[in-house]
Length: 94
Length: 372
Image (cartoon, helix red, strand yellow):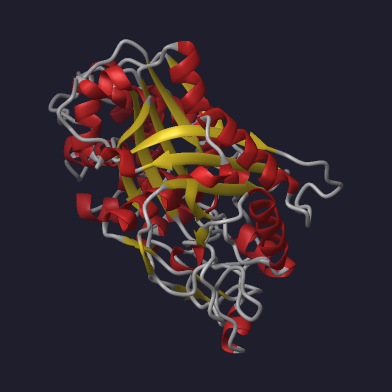
């Protein structure tokens, strides 16, 4: 991927965690989502945002529930229809 | 005893004209809560909620645990996240990609977790009476079920195409055309009247006496009693002219507070300013009270729907602490009951009123004086 996926993921995750809640940035692709501050709905939302950014159709992304960050990366690699040039560009798409 | 320990409110007196719809209207809103809503990934009501979910207050609640704590999301309408429509092509035209997150009770469950141990979660969808109607639940939970703290979050966003269309069409909200013709938002007035829609939110923390006394902070008010009421009516979106629903709620709240009508000095009305509410609320109030002063905040901040009852009560508490009872904006004649001018706070207890579609009425009695 062109962009730093972890940087993008952390920005998207932060969007899903309200300001009053702490968020420790994810720094490893092996991290399991259950070990982050995202709850199960948060993971669904993050997946939806990432799918939107990479142009993955809703009917595909709705069926996917990643356990670890690397699952999400593989999913994006397999289904993406577009790629942002930068994290800034990606955030502008959602 | 039940205390309103602290609260946070979000509202705006600023207005903006939404003119690319069938019934152009001015609204009191936070446009930033609508940024990118068309992607279906952002929810304006959630963003409104975050305006009052102050991290210091959330942290304080989480760190000062109590034995039994409840969370109430009073969201006014069953579909908390609003009504997605496809009628017009503007930024209010949004839908949701995650249905689960648009559901009131799912959102309530998520937010409740932020406050630590929660023993009871409930939601209320009593339309515009919602946030005040749950005062009865606050009283019940604390007095009969032994809860020590009740956290009430009330937020609703009804600035969307379907609602603007509905209210514009039925003449409930003021259209831009009416405003250009000189009509101004007001209440209980023979010339001006009607409301603009508004976004609003309130987070309020109620505690029992024991919990309150164990803290150093001073409370904002005491909740003395509350009740909801209804009335026989053939029109579920209408109100009886004789104000029976309002009167029933008022009498119930007085009964639960163990007070007489003479004990109430100030009434925060629902005060939408529609012909129907003017008639109904005035009849209800005057069937119970003889000596009172009344105000309305809706001409000032718009109709914040489900959040309005409690949000406006907090605004009145702030005004009373500043020493005034504010006038109802845009009154066209001198009136010393339904105030046409600001007056000095006379002291005394507050009766807050709210009404919601579905023939739902709510009343709650608060006391600020006793804390001085």
